[in-house]
Image 1 (cartoon, rainbow, N blue to C red):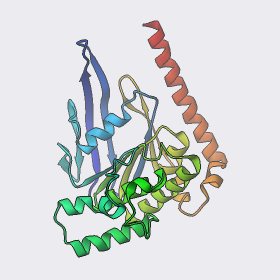
Image 2 (image 1 turned 45 degrees about the vertical axis):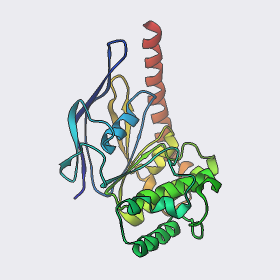
Image 3 (image 1 turned 180 degrees about the vertical axis):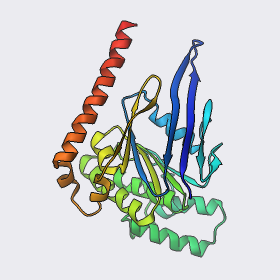
Image 4 (image 1 turned 135 degrees about the vertical axis):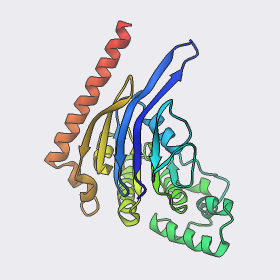
Length: 267
């Protein structure tokens, strides 16, 4: 089983002035294989730092993450990352972007071409393989980024605000696509977002983080991701349970922000 385990993870950054910032404190949790986790919280709570450590871009100053029983010590093929901006090679075609990782590994060209077509079909980009990436809309570019990540068959998919730059309608369509991919592939997904609505809709589990130092404040087990596979997202968002949970979390984060501002002003 490729479970993700956080064991008392801490991250302390040194500042130029000689001080320190305790970005993460004693983060511990287990994300089971196939689960969909969303993480949100006020600015400065360490969401992106958390994701970067799991991706292997940073090493924690204390504790460790384990994936499938092995400690994460750097980037690896068992993890895939989707960024807010697709981080695509815009001068390449859609197909060349999607198969980039497989080409770097020297995979069979015929087999790779078949996989590219399969994933372009899954993300709704049939017939766009030869299109220069710079000609695509933002939403279509994020579909390319998803396909490029998934074609490498990672155990864990990490998403850092992947839909944040999209317009409202495109964002809603992409949320539905993320849920579809989660269910059809059985992949473990962890998504960072600033949108409470998005975190509620996409999170089978949801972590609310608190800042200074960044820590897990509250966890929710939610039904909305499963509902989103068969029900219109707008209908879900209009439900009483969704509205009540949204208001509870918004109030929670608002109070955290007020506390931060109070401490800043007092300083």
